[in-house]
Image (cartoon, helix red, strand yellow):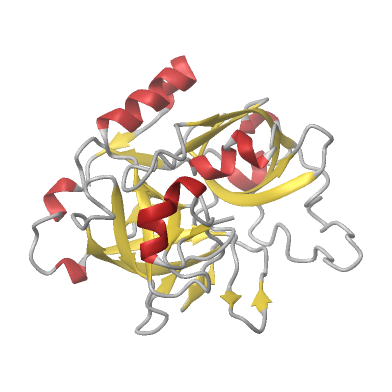
Length: 292
């Protein structure tokens, strides 16, 4: 899932109707065997029917950070199942509905019945597009523990990105993106490996009218060694440089075919971190907060 805004004028005049969700890593991507804390998240309604999928990152052994439009109640989702295998849904048969060897989209050892939304949709630029999936059991208590180990993502400290807003040579600031979304989307066909992929993206803007201190605008250049995001990558992490520190979550784009620029909702703000702290309570003590 990924929110896409096809026409900027439409977004600015009628965004109350909602943006369009984000998908998989595109462009010059590679298989991601590095960020084992990034999960494929399947969401399900009250009848247990699959509604949509997103990506997310473990920040403690029970808390997964994702996008607010993924956990929004308007999607009908009331629960989630998660997979951490790099090829979690690769052999899912979309024609017959036969599940992948991992269990996607029917079974998983990692389950959540606690979905939280920061306040999406709140209008542009402050969409409040952050969500949390709190697991029923600690990840270390599941069969996935051998895959995930004890590696978790950290969150950038409050204001960590601000120093980049006026920095010269912004185009040299790089980020790593990771997710399970679409790899190709155009009017003719789509390609979705349902595998965790990663790519490098570059900073474009922190202060435009669509960023304005709430979002970070990154390149979606499909060449020059770079990649971008698409449907299914929603909620996946934007990691500073080659670190495991999340500065934002994958939020929306301005083109339904996953071209152009990407927008990520920042998590290095006091308001967002206060909300996370209030939502997960004592679990907050386990979250690593790091400077860039």
